[in-house]
Image 1: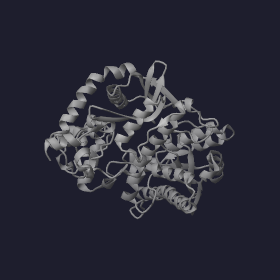
Image 2 (image 1 turned 90 degrees about the horizontal axis):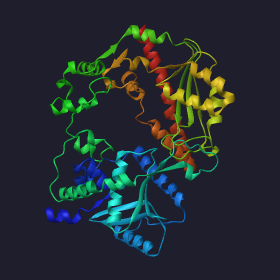
Image 3 (image 1 turned 45 degrees about the horizontal axis):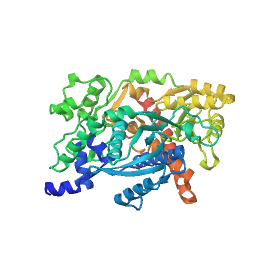
Image 4 (image 1 turned 90 degrees about the vertical axis):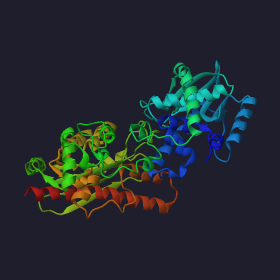
Length: 499
């Protein structure tokens, strides 16, 4: 491919500009070899959709505008529709399209104010980030370069202090920041960067190695391609407990495989991870396991919650943006030593609205009134219970008694009283279970983590397909059930090792 041909097809967009700032090689690959991109996972798709939903809702800040849609229009047609809207005197435009110096951008909200045109970028986060300044700065560069006078350039983001009561109040849900001075100050750098990226795209692929930029500020779409040469396991599989923090310092010295790592430069947990892997060892501190087991008393309850996740718009009255609202629990109970294991569960019907009252009442009824309540990484369940106590003061005393009985089953694994090389440095349930109880597995489940569980419940809320709703319901029940059954089996394993 000649440099001349490359120049003719390498028009930039806002998203490609931001990608090029992060990594020129990723921009080059996006332009010329997009087939090398990683497959987008379901969780990432949910994040994209959440961002799109936030953008649409933010339009209610400036109602009665005209939209310039992506779907069904070429960039040239979007530019023409924007030009016509401006010529017609339209005061508010959603997704206005502009091109300048070979760079195409879409503006989330464009409004004609008393002092001139206002450019507003909408984000689903709860505050300002450096990458947003670059995002707005390149839009300002293109829009003003295209001839429109912009008086204000700013950010619209989620207000995390907002608490819903009744219908969502859009003007309270969102906060606005005027960033005009900072955006104007960045224009010389934008001009320089645009020229540099265009020059780069007219040449062969730049030689850019892997580094921290591969995940900052966003995960790179070519991660799998660029990291294909990295063996597994590698220095990058070390868990970041203690030192060292900069794993790339080892990579740059050619110390990549576990066999190549200088053990004296590692933290003790990392050293244990490497040594256990090289020897394929299971390491058990029996005294540490005994110490943990002494904190556990019958009746035993094994508890796990599933909650909403990454929902910027509060779903129910009394909730705030991104609040994790419990909608499901699984509970295994053993009343006495040698007793049978009983299972209880609740999965709230999303069609019934706010699940919290039903959740509290069923949970308190199903839990024994005494004994240990085991959770994995219990801080999560504890925080949700504290929020439920605040939501329902009449249940607060009973909920606080539940909190007082929580014991964290992760402890002997987090403090490395038990470590198996197959845990790969992690103390998560998803790492411990297959290492110790390989016959139990999440691999065949449709829902395999908390993010997918939240997405499934929200899909149930939106779906009108009875068959899909039932399939998702069963998938959620199967997943949450396995979480608590896994804890039952892991505690059994600890008892056997201790004896």
